[in-house]
Image 1 (tube, helix red, strand yellow):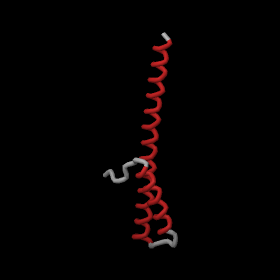
Image 2 (spheres, rainbow, N blue to C red):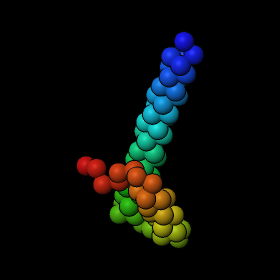
Image 3 (cartoon, rainbow, N blue to C red):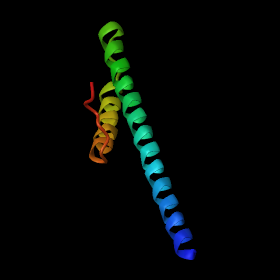
Image 4 (cartoon, helix red, strand yellow):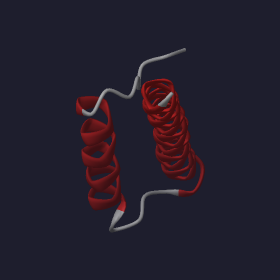
Length: 79
């Protein structure tokens, strides 16, 4: 009987781990979308109102975050 319970416990842990991985993937995808939105807002403001002094630094920081997400497996180029 304990063998059955051990298998059930192991399966539960496996499923919980898979669910956590999926939640993490969704969080990372949302973070990437938010960062891409931020870049879009900066570019739109540049085109309509002009550039601010820290725009390049902000874009560089956002791109670095996006690269880190991409290296961790998040799809950045989904259209």
